[in-house]
Amino acid sequence: MKTVKRFFNRMSVKFLMLVTVVGINSCAEAQPKGFETSGKFSLLWEITGNGLQKPSYLYGTIHLYDSTVFRIPKEVYTAIELCDNLALEIDMNSIDQGKLLQRIMISDPDSTLDKLLEPEVYGEIQKIPFIKMMGEAVNMMKPFYIQQYILIENPMTIQSVDLSLNTYAGQKSKNITGIETIDEQLDAIDAISLSEQAQGIKDVYDYCKREQLGFAETGKKLFNTIQLAYKDQDFDKLVNLEDEFKMTSNSSISDSTFVGVRNVNMANRIDDFIKQNRTLFAAVGALHLPDYKGMSGVVALLKEKGYNMRPILIDLNPAF
Image (tube, rainbow, N blue to C red; front, side, top):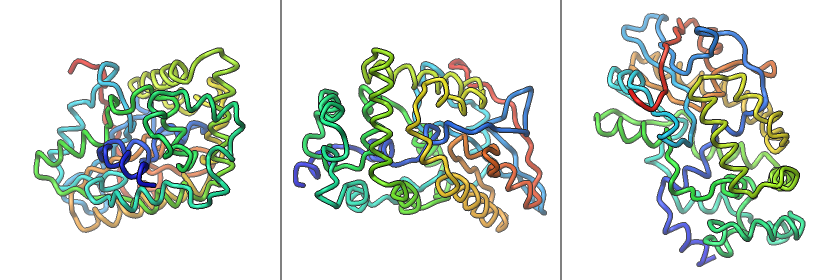
């Protein structure tokens, strides 16, 4: 355990957020509908009505990105400046890293990663350079978090939209809060059995073997596909990634507990906040915005509460 603690002590909050924030990859199954702008589902929405004196805003993020593919558009920063408060999925400034470490580790010594995976799969994972850095931490970490890393060659070079927004709001002296708590997000992950989490790793391994690609190559292909679809605000492409990559690793977490209930909670908390007439820029994973699989997205849920939801056209091309 000392080795595990030393490893995580070397990692920044950015590292911890990359493995804990539930993002766009965890919803790649459903078909969105409605609320289209120029044939595409908008990422940025103005919230008015219900007696609000000033508008608030809702933005769909992608938690990880490469700034050479797209940049956060100036309209997003302008909207943040117009609000007094930024609400991310969770308040990254309030995370207890020690408690977080405990939550992401396997507590049952009979259910460690080497016992959840076949030797062939476990052996291949051990060859990944970044996984090697974790040492014994790998075997003790819940499979969900390991899966986030086997497809990223060097997680420390990846940027986070959430952290970028957090930094900008801090520079503008905005109040920063969280829509959910870290415990709520971790509870949603823990609702998935360790065997189901391990199946996600097996699915990725099977895909790599079938396509004769390494983990890093597959990760780069998937990562670029997600980024380009997000840049184009092409939700059809985003939600059909599972079909394109023929992986089933996300199916167990695209359920009513993991997405539908969270959408309701997000909408309720955004509503509670702006009812106090406190201007809010709320940023959540992009696929929490639309409806799918018979579950209402945050945009529809806020409309049901009587708010006017106006989509704002934005351009995510690298050059402003």
